[in-house]
Image (tube, rainbow, N blue to C red):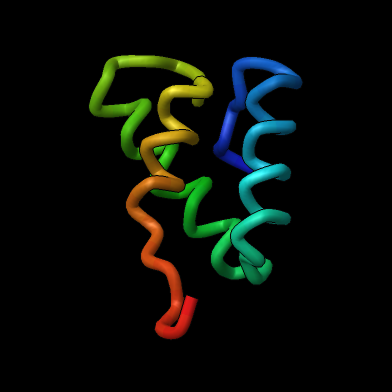
Length: 66
């Protein structure tokens, strides 16, 4: 996770639970991390927090048929 400083273990747990529940591919997982890092940057935060992960996950679209 180079470049993605997560603010704590709870952040990683949230991301992993969302990835499992929403069936993220490895590419999708990394994409959520990149969006969360961008959101943290826009927020002026040095680390990615739960709010950034939650917002990044909310931008993911569910595949058709779900």
